[in-house]
Image 1 (cartoon, rainbow, N blue to C red):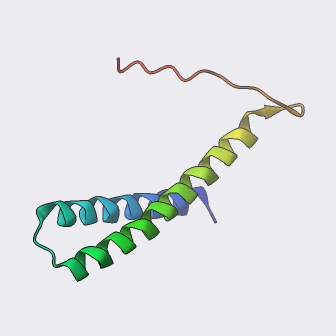
Image 2 (image 1 turned 90 degrees about the vertical axis):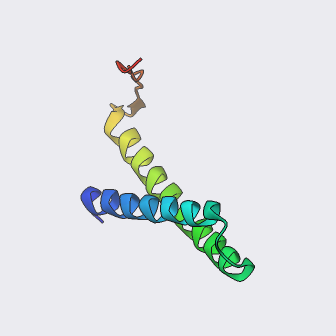
Length: 79
């Protein structure tokens, strides 16, 4: 699976999860609809977590040099 496809899948799953949360927060769903949305949300959350784990593993492989894992602190200029 290519990195681009994973990113698209992650973005789609995250967008669908955000939409589900908005629907649940609206309070306009029946109990049955809410349970179905919650179940779907759990599946989407797992898909997002899997995509993030795969990305983390890929980053770790890219940072590995001479059999040693080197880490570089992330610098956020956005303060």
